[in-house]
Amino acid sequence: MPIRMKRLSRSDPNYKDHEFKFYHSWCHDEKSAKVKSIYLASRDDIDKSYRGQRFFTYLNGGSYKRLYHGTSRACHIGESGNDLKLCHDDDCGTCGILRQSFKLKYADDEGMFGPGIYSTPNSSKADVYVKNHYISSNLHAMLICYVVASKPQRKLLADHDITRPSRGFNCVSSRYLRTIGH
Image (cartoon, rainbow, N blue to C red; front, side):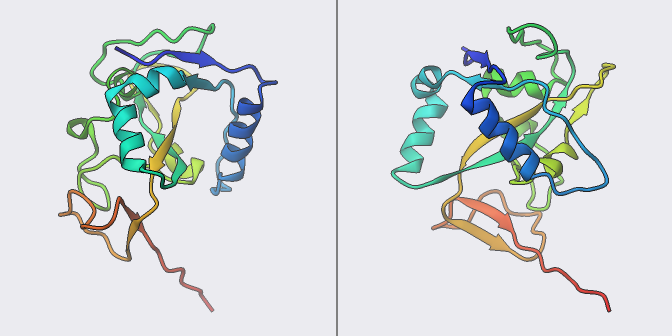
């Protein structure tokens, strides 16, 4: 069963917090975005769900990070009213994730670290993957995710053959080196 979502009022402290962090994590100066609506998942529904229980078990007193996930949208979900009507289009990543959570079989298999579900602390980086599929709209959908990422395995180079972090780590993170031109 899908988790219930509630549209937040612009005056809600949660709305202001998410909006602030979205704008402050935007790192690409050549493009911009404007937050139009924020929907929040029901905490009770998450706590009762299989994925929610696994999240809290895996968290086990550790920490999590607020990250962004960009995906496709093949419907007009979130564009009008307070209700989110999930579509059943297989090309709609947004509705698929909201209905069933993340599924590796639908994940990008050409990412830096092979097949996986990718998220980023930079909203503008996630925006690279936000697409409207077969629909005409000026609006896009991006997911804010809480991810257990307290023990990252940091990699300097792409590794397309891995399927999970090595033992002792709970996520894979890229660590890039900046080059300074003279």
